Image (tube, rainbow, N blue to C red):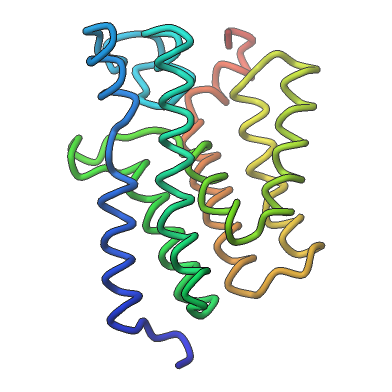
Length: 196
């Protein structure tokens, strides 16, 4: 099949994008607190700002939902034994849906939870190793943003070391790069010493 998408994979890719684009942080915050996370804190709809806006319950629900919208489409693709190229495309579609959601005029989250979501059923050990870097960095620095950035940077390295396919490594490069770029404002604050 090469680098072509079957009709089945194309349908799943579109489904992955529209699922990934569901703004759970906004939905849960409004439902449980009446607040809009886009108007509080960093203005982001991801789990961290959702927690700051609506509390722990909103944050946890958002985190789990944002992970799930990566796990579900990629899990189905892996279960159907699609090609590495097709799985990579579906994974990236779910991730891009989260950071560029059509429902919110393409202004979405930073993609950390959904990044892990797409990796869990596809490259679980890459996800585990990257998360260990996230956890250690957060424990040492107390900065969620720095932990997220470093976990994205090491993602393709672990994919390569753990023998992922070329498509898997390439997907990790895209995932890590886009997630890091989405943290551009955090990077500026980290360098200025004003990140909280």
